[in-house]
Length: 278
Ligand SMILES: [Zn+2]
Image (cartoon, rainbow, N blue to C red; front, side, top):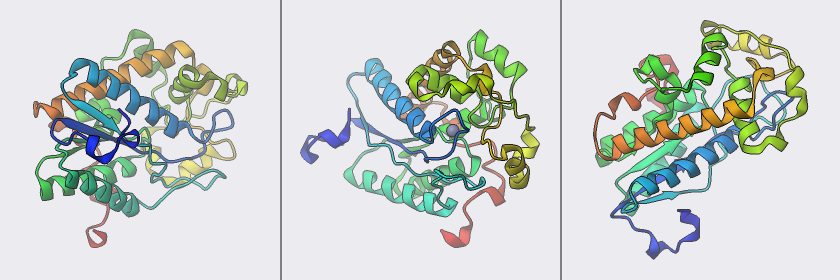
């Protein structure tokens, strides 16, 4: 249910949850629009709220308009709108505190932008809110993106598993995001995706901004967009919504949710918002 369509006194603060979506506008290669993360986040927020409501009609699942902001460190391409990590932390913290002040007891943040520092800033904001208000805020995407490294088996379908085995290093605008966009908004995918070059980058190279910039060059993707398909997009979508729903239900029921609270890199101090800026 879209909160922006309600009057303030129609908002049920007793038996409800609010899902906050945010994602930056940023380049996604020559073949995808700069709004990819925004569109993915929008789909995941809407589909998740719908599925949660189907599973438990007694609770209201509210959504807010997607906040078009995020943190990243990559080279500046036209179209990139990136904020510093501590700014994202403060924005999320203040938004969550506002919602807490309404009296809402379950607030979930969903962001389709996989940059670890972005996810970690959101998780730190949730931790702050939970220390101050009691357990209220939850951000499962860092853990879901970390998958097995966070101890989570996403239970992918066979076609996705096979692709992940063969082409795991698909970090940005590759077969994963291109497939999802083919499924969500096929007209937004330029046909040149079929002729894009494979850009290989190892996970350990992803911590070097210089290496990322060199690999992206004037193209902008990291991975294998030419291998995308609508079929893969549908399988990825179904799986993503199932996993987000599962994580949120675990959080709301306070049942075995803790491994969904953090990106696997959360414990690395230099990836976090510095103490002095809190
Ligand atoms: Zn993206």
